[in-house]
Amino acid sequence: MRTNKSEELFERSKKRIPGGVNSPVRAFGNVGGVPRFIARAEGDRIFDVDGNEYIDYVMSWGPMILGHGREQVLEAVEKACREGLTFGAPTEKELVLADLISEAMPSMEKVRLVSSGTEATMSAIRLARGYTKKDYIIKFRGNYHGHSDGLLVKAGSGAMTTAVPDSAGVPKGYAETTLVAEYNDEESVRALMDEYKGKVACVIVEPVAANMGVILPKEGFLQFLRKITEENDCLLIFDEVITGFRLSYGGAQEYYGIKPDLTTIGKIVGGGMPLAAYGGAAKIMDHISPAGDVYQAGTLSGNPVATAAGIETLKLLRDNKEGYAELEKKASKIREAFEESGRKRGRRIIVNQAGSLLSAFHCGENTSECISNYDDVCTCDLDFFSSDFHALLDAGIYMAPSQFEAVFLSMAHTDEDIERTCRIIESL
Ligand code: KE4
Image (cartoon, rainbow, N blue to C red; front, side):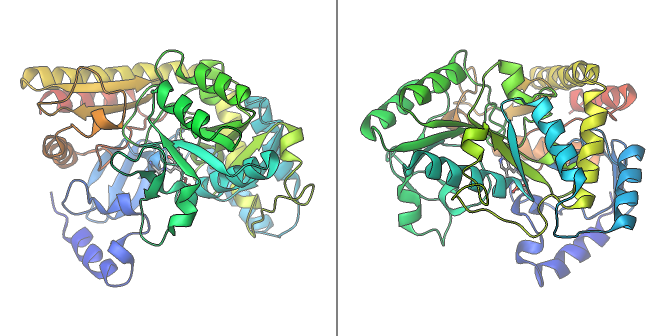
């Protein structure tokens, strides 16, 4: 496969852009090789600058659930562009989108539109602290909520109760009020709640973890979080930036039947444009400026082009909810192909799947029988993963360039392309 144009662009980009990319995971750091510079996309396909064509299973990390270039979305965006890219003033589209979000996820009685998932989670955390007047937050090791300082932390080895910054530039003081628990480990949450009794503002969780690969909540785990937050008078925040409109039209909260106090969404809700949101009960959200004293703002928040894309995307999903069952069936075929591929090679590949979200964990010799937390993920064989990643890429199958990400399908993935993908996976 010729990749010299991507190689040349990557070398030049590294001289102008840190790491040659505008978001780290795109640099193929986990798998090596040349990141493909993409020229265009259509349906379930992407085309790189060397003219290579791939079936796309990244779908821009989740937003493109309808596939690339869905006509109705493009038309709405083109129309909005002609009416004006941005005004910095309220528009009817923002209300239409907020109504659609609230109708899909009734726990989001009030909604604030922002421009990225990071902004949504950062603002929801500030709101939880302002509303409860408490400072500590609990997050889970291996959960990713964007790159705001207080969320960019994970427990240091052994120090599971106070975090150490995961990134340079995050002052220790910023991380000290971030407590880190273990995903699927109720005792680790209970211990923190007891140790910091009366001081915890919220628990923020990915209801299905998808940033250490896909890890499903154990039976009762989410219900436990709902109960222990109510008992401790703190808020439960569902970070549904990935699961929102992905697991089902109503997201994980509909899929699992749990009502969080606050929800953050992104990706799909913007239809491929920079748009995200956070929301919850009016009694909480009315603490947000200018209604209340928790400040949050944004020049391009709810801009007319992004809201046009989001409105059209949600309407198409709302009016085609049976598409989610189809999507899950396609994902199951991919899961079965990866499992078969491991069996044929005498290797273990464990695939976790929730709805159409899945990850194929390439097991190491010490990997346990199931992958249910961060420590399990760390036993995977990253060389095995990256060898399969590159074999698939060379065969025209574009999967996430990291063992710690998810496979994203779209409603544009044809049965033929799914079959073709399965054949290639099984031939690895
Ligand atoms: P953004 O700021 O990237 O829009 O959203 C941050 C975010 C928040 N919450 C969850 C659960 C997320 O998964 C994300 C971002 N997801 C990654 C993919 N794992 C985005 C890809 C990237 O970082 O380039």
